[in-house]
Amino acid sequence: MTLTAPFDRSIVSPLEDSFSGHILLPGDEGFETARRVHNGMIDRRPAVIARCIGSADVVDALAFAIEHDLEIAVRGGGHNVAGRAVCDAGMMIDLSAMKGTWVDPERRRIRVQAGVTWGEFNRATQIYGLATTGGAVSSTGVAGLTLGGGFGFLMGKHGFTIDNLTSVELVTANGDVVQASHDDNTELFWGLRGGGGNFGIATNFEFALHPVGPTVHGGLIAYPINAARQVLGFYRDLTADLADEATIVGGLTHAPDGSGTKLAVMLVGHCGSPRDASAALEQIKAFGAPVVDTLGPITYTALNQFLDPSFPKLAFNYWKSCFIDELGDDVIAVLDEQFACCPSPMSKLIVEHFHGAALRPDPSDTAFPHRGAGYSILIISQWRDGESDERNIAWARETYDRLAPYARDGAYSNYMADDESMARVRQAFGDNFPRLQKLKDRYDPANLFHCNQNIPPSR
Ligand SMILES: Cc1cc2nc3c(=O)[nH]c(=O)nc-3n(C[C@H](O)[C@H](O)[C@H](O)COP(=O)(O)OP(=O)(O)OC[C@H]3O[C@@H](n4cnc5c(N)ncnc54)[C@H](O)[C@@H]3O)c2cc1C
View 1 (tube, rainbow, N blue to C red):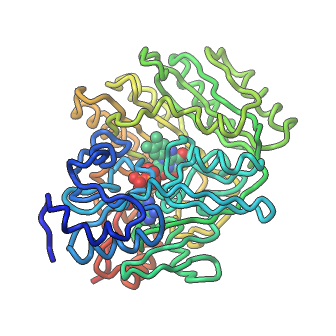
View 2 (cartoon, helix red, strand yellow):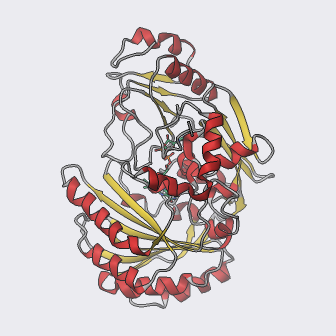
């Protein structure tokens, strides 16, 4: 039966009868909050939100959506700037209440349900002094970040998040609950490591953990904006020969206090021995005349919350990004000039560097194919409701266009906004696209799971 929203509660009663979580319809308490995601620009109204608390809820919600021909959107942490976690007039299968975490410190493994955020993940693992590569902002969801690849402070030493994924429980389009790992459904497991939510609804994930923290070294060092070119040049020199244990993000940003003060920054994480880490930090501290220097011992948890105040929930976001091989003077000049004309005091230009363990796998080892040395440049246009959308979006696009001559093929699906072309989405999967499409044909031939950076079936 096909439904048109809004529909009567009696239609969802059979689902509610056995549901362990909550079914929210427009007008229900909590519906308005539940339908919103991190990006305030996304303002969609599902017909029904199925807030699941376990895999059986997910199976039942999916069956209901199929029976009633409802479009399906799956929400993990809700951080994706494209806002694909929510759809208009369909069903949002909301996993954000699925908060289970089980750490096995002996085997150095964690299993988490799909609603866990990186802040919750780190809290659960750090009591054992364990961690794995994860998002640098604590409210980002484990689920979406992992399914897309996963960059974070530990990637030089331990690879991307997907390189630490050991198994996934998935509800497939036909309602089966399957395990995918290096031993089970291996092709599916390959596809889940970068192919996003295209093959089903992941209900829980298992990861390998490593001894990290509780205290590591790092923090933020910031310089006046008139030193931007020198700071980014120094950053380039530093990253030319970096220990695996160190990961450094460069950037041009505004102080998070709303003052509009522009800064050139480096955000550093070092998970090596205190001796090596201190020596690495001293080298950075000796450069220039910083106006803020927090580099030193820091808990791993605090390091991964450092950026939180710069990303308030419901701020308007429009992002563009690209990969570059080299951070040449010409690229640095573009960054400096574009940041100077940035219309919002909340926006930033972020440079992430790839090296070490993140680059060792072959591009075909995981669905995420981008294993080349170099950098990701992330243009984060962020502003408040009421300020000009057009101006802020135009600034991000213009910055991207000016960087395009230096960019290599490729894109990171997790950084895409809602308006990327199909050609650009394909670039996110690179040469792995045909193999991913075969997997899509096998697991989701009707493209039920299309609210994502979509891999359409071949026919
Ligand atoms: C402030 C901020 C900081 C960020 N920092 C980082 C970072 O440090 N490193 C990095 O790599 N990325 C980072 N990102 C990008 C991030 O990886 C993506 O936004 C990612 O999609 C977030 O996952 P989520 O579960 O929160 O998102 P959601 O919006 O809930 O989901 C994203 C996509 O994945 C699908 N999906 C979610 N859960 C499931 C599931 N269980 N099964 C199937 N499909 C699912 C959704 O349908 C949607 O298409 C950041 C984003 C923001 C906004």
